[in-house]
Image 1 (tube, rainbow, N blue to C red):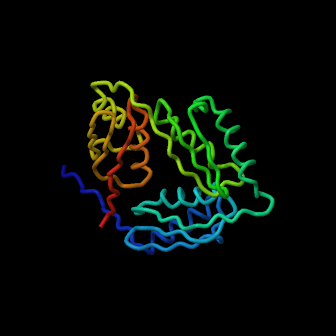
Image 2 (image 1 turned 45 degrees about the vertical axis):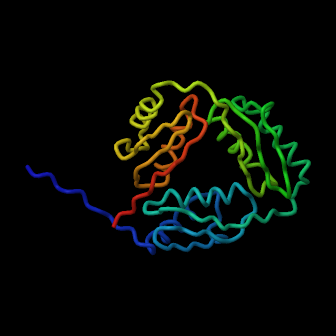
Image 3 (image 1 turned 135 degrees about the horizontal axis):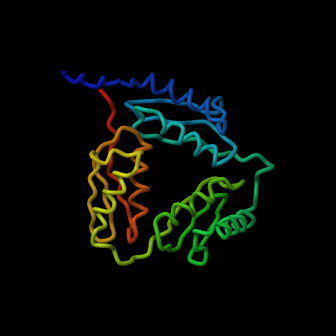
Length: 228
């Protein structure tokens, strides 16, 4: 019996715009009426004004969840209400306390700077997942306008099987199609190449690479393949 070829679904810019709007309406963290959406060749631009950095990121993540989206330009402005305003000193203290309560983050290795509500974190950690955890811990703090993550991962011995280990982890990951992803390793630096069908899959592959011991940087060159 002949196997029927899969049906290719074409996502037009208009359809993507509609889907992003519906996703924003569905997401309880976001007020869709505060956000403007424009789509050109699969690239979504978000505009508008929200009252927390967490909401700005939630809108960005919602757009990335939509099939056909190749990239998102997040031009949403965070305008804090008076009740959420904090001095930079108060916000710096809140960031330090939040990081200290997270057991996976080595706070003694980190340096926090706050300028007009924008938080910059520098220092070194042992693993890539700790770098990501530090950034995520700050996102939801009241008064944050943005985050710059300048944390570096310490150089450590890299297993000789690192490429195979990452490839096997990608195969185990239900969110990624490992057959479309190529892993290139140069010392402690990992480059991911290939094409996937969604931003979520692209990010999942990057998180998998960061989880490998000894990895100090991940260059994610995976592209999002838009159906045509």
